[in-house]
Picture (cartoon, rainbow, N blue to C red):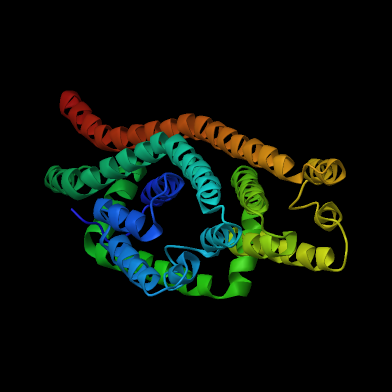
Length: 351
């Protein structure tokens, strides 16, 4: 069944197979026709149909992809463009496939490390809702009939349940409103910049975000240099690709420095808060040795491992903390329910 979005996995499949088909001597229009039939996404199928139509009219592959920037971003199109101009499209697509695969693998590892903590939170929330909406109303009626003097913990629990039962729509509406406000604020570049700057200052999430941006920049820059793109144009694409606004701004300033004749390492060295000194020194070594491409490949792999390692450590820290919090909540609920019942039965025995 066709889907209504284009996954990274599907893009990887498309690029890898297109590279092999072109290398095998197949014409681009024939390759696209074949790959279009294997596409599951309705959106991607429609885009490929339009690309194929324009190619048959005489347009280049890169030019025909420009009409679909959400599917084929600037990085994607730049690699294709250089490949078409230099006659090495199959090789460039192979570099692009490797880059997409690395990015997909990193995201998959990060999400995989967060699955268990998220599962614990979902289970805890489910337990809270079941107790609040189904168990507590029945207990409230029982306590009222028995005229039991309720302890503070029980009154808090019952009050929370009553509040949720009466005003759940207001809570959901408030959450939805906050989500909408947040999305609107994210459109404003200045707000987005300061939010991204705050994220970078967080102990764990900041480190993951920093490593992810460094890995993305390094992997993209390596791929573009390997494809044959000049340094200034490569930096332009990297500015468009990195997700964090702080990195976008700093890379823009680095690009200006390089345009004035400075080396990349000199430009990066002016922003030690986003580009660590070790990163800058490695780039300097690459510039001196004439091995800049391989240095950026090494840096990409290094920071991908660092991001994965940090998120694993965070996951290992969150798991016991979440388990303790869930345990404390369960203990609170049990005591809140048992205490008044125990007081009532004790009173019966005394009489």
